[in-house]
Image (tube, rainbow over all chains, first blue to last red; front, side, top):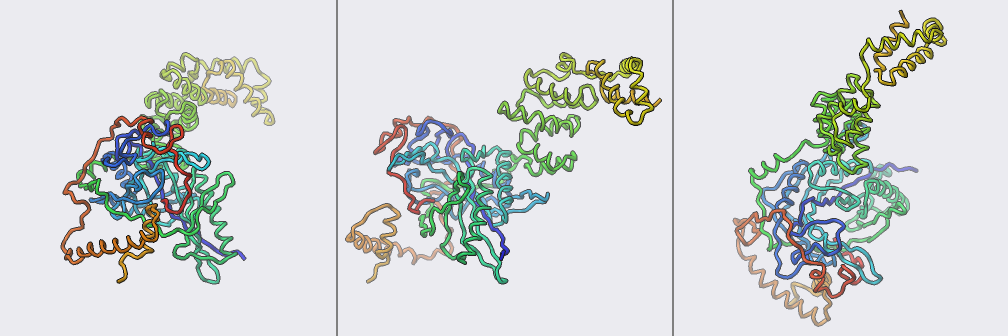
Length: 487
Length: 102
């Protein structure tokens, strides 16, 4: 018998902040550099060294907290979380325990049916990342401490998500938000963003709800892995419940690792030993007070958020939600589009040029779309030329590509490359008259033979275009030709 | 008199601190830590109803540095005190997850 069940998921999220230096020392953050070349006595945990807070890391965190609708605490402090691990040289992690800088927010995620859902944020706090245990040498491990001390924003959500899709939507929305804010590169492959879902099921049997033991899943390096791990866990937990009837009790939360090669979760540890991190206030760091002035100043740096921008593109510009989503996937594209349209070009034209040609070029060159050597004015000019029929849609694409190469303005390129369409009706009429004179049979068919009318008119149209060497505006040609054939 | 910090607690703290203690030490620390604990408990006699919780003993807040890089140590310097190394890395006994990690 199939039992009804509901998937319950909460997330613990870690986001690397894109500061230049570490959170408590001046070592530069450099992903992929030679191991142990970005360390100092502070991040190596040398006795007598003292941490000093990176102001930008805190401001980036507060900015993110604001974007996630969190309450920002006027008073926050640093605590030591003690545990022993070779990639944690001090034997404690500087974190925030009872007074995190922000709490009680929410993030709105888009659902497949076009509506949105609010996922509550329990808290967000700032801490330092540990180093990296890079590879195993037989009975030994190798440690790289370049990453130790990277500012890490930990965001904890309420268990408000009920499907793999919702978790995927939250992950993508959060990535879009932190990238818009410029506070993180948020590249999952590089570990800038790590998602650890806590998953269980509420299964209904005989009118009673049974809660399965919670699984925490680690080692998820892509959005797809996050989604698949949840779908997998739901199936596994359902199966386990059917077979064993095991339900959630205190302390039977288990940790699983995602095995991407085999697309399955693997049990890492069954029963969490009662952790005792022996948190206590860090005496090396003084507390932080965020007054109204400072908070206001940080608030003023908030930009229009991606979901707001997407909604505005739909309501203000009449774009489809899909197009608006593609354009607002990153801030550079959204901003570039917005500016170009405000210069008077047609919405749909700019949208097509950017999504079909611009994004492809940007990807090839590995730059944001607003750094293709093309200004918003130049793009608006090109779009307007296509709008009035000076160039065809396909010529506009060609010109776009040439603009990215040379940085020239579209008019000059169009003239040099003979891409200007002729819309002069006198000139076109002369061509049409020639074609009509040269093809009496086709003209006859077009006029009086219903079976061949469409085909013959198309043929005549093609002849005119050929005579103009492809430069006549097809719209104008078809208008005049039709008039003459129907006369 | 039973100790405030019993031997099981001493063993747990020793484990969390990666210390290996002899049986004698466990019993000795149980007695000593209990005595220290009792002494500290004197503080509980103080009426703190109208005292704000203290987060830090210095009356100072908001000490920051700007986000400006400073030179780091060379790889050689960073590894100078390491008991063992492998190329540019610290070499440590293989990490076996014993549930104490975060």
